[in-house]
Image (cartoon, rainbow, N blue to C red; front, top):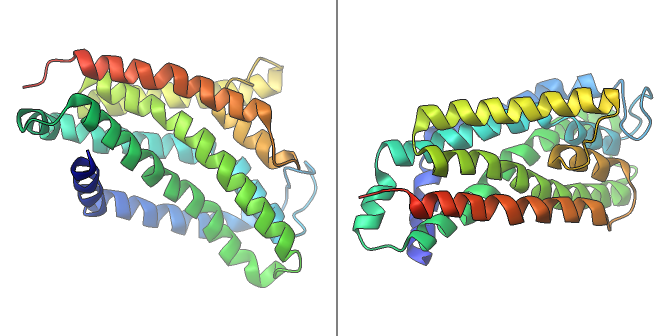
Length: 245
């Protein structure tokens, strides 16, 4: 399995699409930073007063970014099915469980990277404006939101993974991932507006983690674990039963 993980990492790190997309996300974060000056998630309607507010605002408003990254994940993993990369690994004697686990271990952290680069690039732009007078608070906030973002983003990214393992085709996987994630994003927006149940969504839990001040957030942990408990077995079941030669 370690060899599979190394191979997957090597292929991902050589993939120009992934790195170009990560660069685009960083540029987008840098350019969009000023748009978060007018509203702070901790005080809706209030202006950002510190670098911490910029970080929180960009993490809070990252749902659109997760849609794009989900489509990119579906593209890269779906490509492995369309190009029969995974078929060759099976014929080489690798266990399906090892192939499946290697994709989870490599892809989930890799796609959290651009999601965190986005607010980091925005803070870099606004550093000259605000400085770091609240350096300790800023560091604590960054660590806390990084922890919950990694937890919730990874749960959300299981959706395109499930689409890929189920459909085993790049074009179909991208279309399905785009449809599902965009639908959930619309539901989150209108659900918050209309008072519909949205607490089950990882994207909502990311926003809650930004707003609360406590490090321990039981609801966020529970929601992420439920998503893992449902989607990982579902994806594994689809992959285990599919015909690959």
